[in-house]
Length: 364
Image (tube, rainbow, N blue to C red):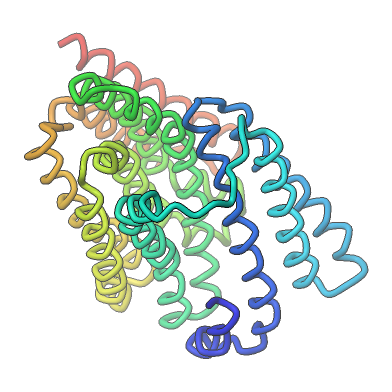
C-alpha cells in the first residue's frame, strides 16, 4: 500500500522527486512486520534481549549510512542504512526470542487477535499522523528557517519521552501479571515516579530554556527557546498520563483510546493552525500542548469511572515543586550569561530547588 500510494502521498507534500526512495523505504514496513517474537521477550521480561536488537540496528544503520555516503547519493546512503538496520534488528529478535512462532493459520486465534488488536493498530497509525502533522503545517505556513527552529525545539522536547518509553516496556507485562487492585498500586507508583522526573525536567526547561538553547547551539537559535519551553510542557503532560494507556489496553478500554487518539489527530492540526497564524512557532507549540491536554481527558475520565484511577492527589507535590523551581529558573535566566558556567548554574539550582520543594511538600 505504501509503495502503491507513494505518488499520491508525495504529491500532496510536493515531494514527487522522493517517490523511488519512498517505495524502497516501504520495505522496512515488511521487514519490521516479522519482529513479532519481541512480544515474547517483553512478556517474559527479558529486557536485555528486548533492547539489544534495536541498539544493534542503530549501530548498523549508522555504520552503513556513513560508509556509503562517500560513494553514493546521500539520500540513498540513508535509505540503505535504514533497511540494513531493520534487517539486523529483526534477525536478532528471532535469534534471541525464547521460541520462534510457527507460520500456521488458526481462524479462532486470528479473530481473537483482530478483535483485540485492530483498535491498537488504528491508534498506532493515527499516532504517526499527529506526531508529524504540526511540522508539515509549519512548513506550509512559514519559511524553512521557522521550521528549523521549531524542529530543534521539537527534537529536544521529544528526547524526554524516552523516559516513558523505557518504563512502558516494563509497565505492560507488570500490569498484565497483576489483578486490578494491585495494578492500581503499580499505576500510582509509576505515575508518581514519572511526574517527579517530568516535572523536574520541565521546570529546568521552562525556567532556563533560552540559556539551554543559546549555550548549546548559539545565539542565532534563540527563537527555538519559546517553542522548546511549551513543547516540554506538552511532553510532560503526555509522560505523566501515559500509564492510563497500558491499563486501558488490558481492561477493555481500547476503543476509548482509539477515539481519544482520533480526537487528538483532528484537534492538533486545527489548534496549531489557529494559534500559529497570529503567534508564529510559539503559537504552534501552544496548539500542540492545548490539543494534547484537552483530548487526554477522554481516557482519564473513562479510567476514573471504570477503573477508579486518579492522579489528582499524586500531582500536588511535583506540581508545586515545578512552579517553584520554574520561577527560580526564570529569575536566574535574567542575570546569568549565556556560557557553560551560566548553563551549569541554570540546570543545577532549579533542580536542587525542585527536589527541596518536593521533599517539603511530601513531608507536609
